[in-house]
Length: 222
Image 1 (tube, rainbow, N blue to C red):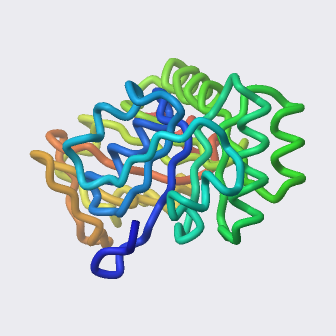
Image 2 (image 1 turned 180 degrees about the vertical axis):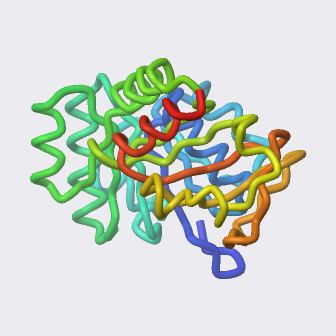
């Protein structure tokens, strides 16, 4: 795989649900992708895309080098349950010189090992669970992206009480301690938000702030 038009090149090792979702999203955004799996059936969905796909039987350094994975700017390790191969793949791509490696993990011990090897780690199931729980707790939320234990980005319909009011009039930042990042209407988003921006109940707004501030904002307007 060689970079096309200077695009970022991302390698994905393990194309189960997590790895495939990452691959499809990256391809839709014009990124160059190397996809690797031991099972040809797992790569079938990518055969008609621009991804370079490779079936390899082991995660040895030699096999990985033959795919060109060492040229990647970032490698995603999507192997979960096969912890031995997850560790081996992570170790070898780091040894091959890939600077950024992000690995899916399924336990704290798994995470500790890969972290010590130099990888960033993600718990997809835990993150999905957190987002689901937060959406259940947030009365007006359409979606929540937790950035830390205390800070989130919240997507919500504009409350009726704010329809026709400007950002400055509402005092989103001064009164509630949160920021309005964008407004979305008819599938089109604008991030050009200022004090004179007028909100509409037909819009979805995207807010950022502490969880406490976001909770308080929703309680007031629910």
